[in-house]
Structures are given as C-alpha cells and as structure tokens.
Figure 1 (spheres, rainbow, N blue to C red):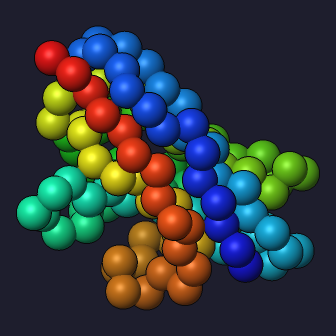
Figure 2: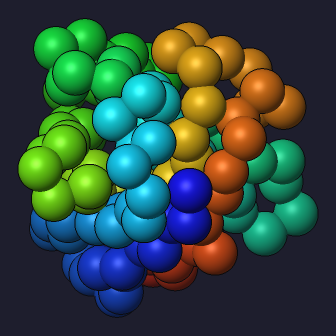
Length: 120
C-alpha cells in the first residue's frame, strides 16, 4: 500500500483544513487508517484512527470534537477534517495504514507527510 497525503497549508487560528490520503492497492480496505503528526523537536504523536469499514473512530483527546476522520473505500481515500485549528496543531501530518488501535510501531505503511501551519 502506498499512501500520498495532500491538503496541507497555512491557515489562521480558528480556521479549517481538510487533509486527504490517497492509497494505492486493493489491500486498503483491510487496514485501519491512522493520522499522526510531528511538530519540530517533538516525537510523532497519534491524532486519530478509523477502522476498515469507517464505522468506528478514535481520537486523541486534544483534537476530539474538532477533528473528524472519514474514509471512502470506493476511492481508496481517507480524510482528516480539521476545524477550529489552533497554533499548537502546527505539525507535519502523516497518514498510515495498520491495525485498529495499534501502536505507532505497528503501522505498516506511511505517507510522506503534509505540512499544516496555523498562525495566531
């Protein structure tokens, strides 16, 4: 599975962005998909995940209620809708394919990342 993120950019605090992650390969539907982020000088951290069918999601507490993950298995794409963005959301965002509620180390495939910058 190859993953390519898009949709990052510069946005003012309080604004919104939608990230997309396009996957190649028919195995996409067999994986849960996760979103992670990494800010300069910090470790990569979990943002949220969605199971293979799209029926279950789980979010890191600081983004719950602001971020939403959706997937379209017909298009092999997963989305991260980010609303009410804060400067502390600034990071490189990555999508990854792996087991449902798996650890970072358990994700098998990663995208190249897309930069999100939130100005105050």
